[in-house]
Image (spheres, rainbow over the protein chains, first blue to last red):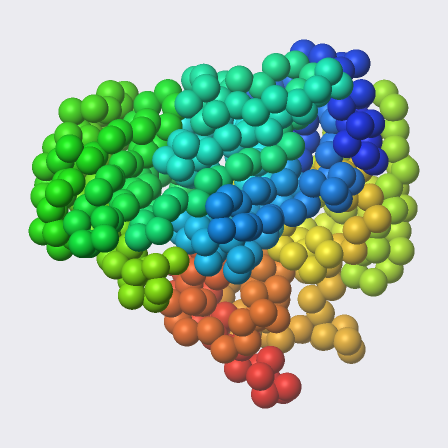
Amino acid sequence: MKPPAFTYHRPQTLPEALDVLAQVGSDGKVLAGGQSLVPLLNMRLAAPAHLVDINRLAELAYVRATQEVVRVGALARHADTERDTAAYRVLPLLRQATAHVAHQTVRNRGTTVGSIAHADPAGELPGVLALLDGGVEVASAAGRRTVGAAEFFVGPLESALRPGELAVEAVFPVPPARSGTAWTEVSRRHGDYALCGVGVLVTLDEDLRIATARAAYISVGATPVRVELTEAVADRAYDAADWAAAGALARAAVEPDDDIHATAAYRRHLVGVLTERAGRAAVLSAVGGVGEGGE
Amino acid sequence: MTEHDVRLTVNGVPRTARVPARRLLSDCLRHDLGLTGTHVGCEHGVCGACTVLVDGLPMRSCLLFAVSVDGAEVTTVEGCRAPDGGLGPVQQAFQDCHGLQCGFCTPGFVTTVTAYLRDHPDPTPEQAREAVGGNLCRCTGYQNIVASVLRAAEITGDGQP
């Protein structure tokens, strides 16, 4: 179908965008890449009176990586985040997870921050933000605030963003030295929504024993689900961890629903299997990183 | 309803249209500019039939508002022809390998593959398959489409069919 009519705004600067968002309040939606919003409009599942197009805010088109943090501006496309070599060097998880976001054609337009603001429980980037305990920089005409991942994701397609606010930046903390990550998921076809997806973050101690491990799951709850796995795998040599126990722990921690794509029981099964798979891959990436000099 | 003036360079030709804000780029190309090569399948970003190149990158034209890409350079399947008006290399490859039957999805494949081969001139069969992973075809079963991608790479690499 065709999208319903709306009033179109195209601010040229961030202050101008925040002014417009303040004026339109709860009648307004932000248009960035539109790869989630426009389908909702075309299917008439959403009908905002105002769209505020931020595609001219070139100041928000950035991916900035330091040794401590990767900051992704609201106009960085998935393809920009995926390609960024400085971000990949310090935080390979961003590329590992972004490669699972739909297809290249969609990643050329859709944005990393938009995917987080959309707060789809099947979205990869919300899962990454939750796993790393990242945050979202939020701006409005009244000022700025930072919202942590645990507070940001409120429910399916529901975030902590208030009317008049714009998510201007996603903040992904870089894990400590001797850490490794992996992202894996199962979907009907590559590029489809995951039936279950998981990211794992493992940190080794100086003797290459597992110090901490945690996972974040997508498509198995109303928001990304974070599970601490440390108790199942800690204090064992990196190659002797009981990832099956970690999988069992995670299976008990999630409460997926049935839907037309998969039963709750199948999704819970995937949580166990993918925890083992991603856990082992994360350990290998941690060991590989140590071999390359600890970064 | 407020209308907006949109300026696009389509297949190298400057074009203008006066459209409501809700006009999708796919409809702008077809209805306002008369370029019906771009096909509209699912209209929610799944099938890939409407794929065009926006400033050189393949994108779903059904998920873009024309007004939002004001000023962009757009390449449609009509722009994938050879300079003499005959079949372009990707089109030729699809003909050579029987990469289409009904042809409805083909414009999206041709634009996607054109952009892909520009950046990856010598794909493996696996890469060729992944390159068209975001496009649906209900006729061919994809084997001939993957073969077409590889054939197009050959043609482009040789500079001649």
